[in-house]
Length: 348
Image (tube, rainbow, N blue to C red; front, side, top):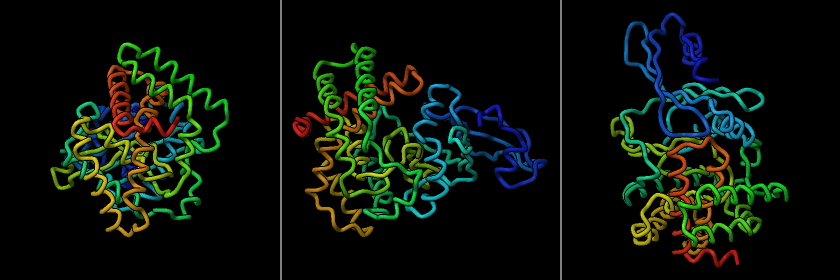
C-alpha cells in the first residue's frame, strides 16, 4: 500500500466500521524512518472531529521498498504485531489493522496514535535516566522467549548472519568500501581502521550471533525507535519500528543502544550500572541463568553492531541528508564504544 491508496473505504474496513462514518481524511508525514513511509492520519467519525491513527506503508522510494521486501522487513513487522506483541510485556502501540501481500512487498499497519509524545532522536541521544527506562522495556522483550525452542516455529523470524554465502560476505565488504568512499571526509582514520578490521573478519563476528542465549531481538533498538512521555505522559516509553525483529542474543539490543545513545563520557560512567539494571529486570522476569560476566562478555561483543548497522543502513536505504549525518554519527559512536571496551582484540 502507498499513501495515495488511502481511502474512506480502506480506513473503514481497517477500523471495522461503515464507510459512510469516515469523513474528512487528512494525513501528514511522521517520523524519520527510511525503509517505510509513516503518516499521521486524521479523520472525522460521524461528525466528530479529532480521531487519528498512525499509518505505516510501503516506502515510496524504490530502493528502500526493494530492501524492505528482500530482507523480509515488512513481513517481520506485520507478523510481530499479529503474533508476538499480544503476549509480550514490552510497551508498543496498539495495532488496529495489519496486512501484507503474499510476496512480502506491499504492506500496511494502522497503529494507535500516542500523541502527544516526545520522539527520540538518534543525533541527540538520551539521558542515563531515559536509558534505564529503555532497558526496562528491552528486558520485557527478551525475558519471555529467553532460550525458548518455540521461536523455531516462526519461519518469518530470522536468525540473521548464519551460514552466509561467500558472495554475500563479499557484497557486504564492497558496501563498506563504498561507505568509506562516500563518507571519507566525515570519518577519522581510527574509525575507518576499526571498520576495516570488522569487515575483514565478518564470519567471526557473525558466529557470535548464533551463540546462546537466544531470544527475540528488536534489532534496531535506538532513540529514533522510541517514544518518550507517550500518550500525554501516561506511558514513559514506547518502542516502535519492529521491522528488524529477529532471533539472537538479547545483549545485542542493549550494547547497540548504550553505545549509540549516550555520549561516550556518560556511557563510560553509567554502563555497568545500566547493565546491572537490565540484568536485575531479567531476573525479576524469571531469567536466572545469565551472570553479569556473561552479560558483560556479550556487551563487548555486540559493541560492533552499531558500526555494522550504520554501514549497512547507509548503503541499502534511500539516501537523505539526515541519514548521512545519522549513519556517520552511529559509526563514530560505535568506534568509540569498541575502543573503550577494547573489543577489537576479540577479532584479531
